[in-house]
Length: 271
Image (cartoon, rainbow, N blue to C red; front, side, top):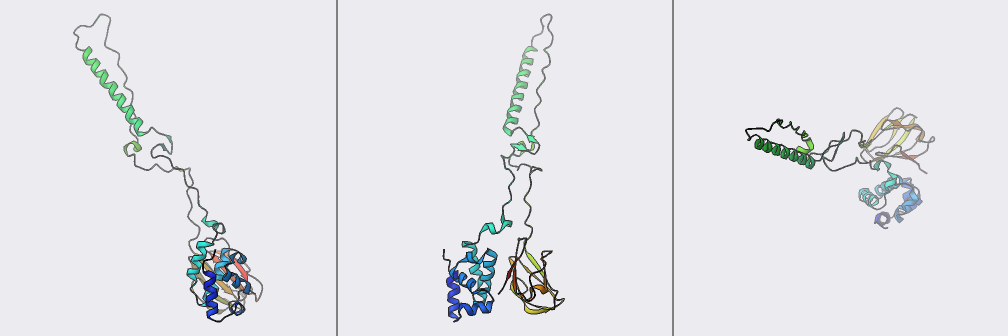
């Protein structure tokens, strides 16, 4: 399905009089990848993280605002299965209010009212019978007062009966959904070699410079951090407290994409 993403990129490139080969040399993104973006052949680029990273870099190179293009891509193409952190947690079972409490079954409010009404009727009948029998002055021989009748106990109304609209108490054995592990991504970059070129493609702060050994920067974003690194062997990245380890070989250019909620970053060697 065409969304206008490819047409927008192609028109901007032609307006600047730039060929795909020239754009690939400037952005250091393969010419076949740029052609795939203009044709909206996103399956040729791998997962959503790669597509969004290349789309953002190419749009900025052409002087096009990448945000509307990313919104169109997410709406039409992005796959939910590529983001396991979005998997929904199971909801606790929900029953009718007041029908079952955390410790077992309890009488319904209507049952308590019926039991109380029946007990009151029994008491009234017994009082009337006692009054009528007490009016005789003489009792037959061998008879005595009627045996005492035990009035059935009326259960005390429960909290649910007094307030039927009150929500049922939560079952302590039911697991509750845990909050998402991350709501933002933080990437700490440290130069461990002599020097490396670093450029921010996405995230804050935005830098483009050669950093010397011992220098460090911390990048944050509520979506994803994308960095282009000139010497993969000279850089150490710590993402949300986890050390990524070696990024690549000496003098190898890589693009690193770290998205919110994902447990690992995407490392894409550049040619």
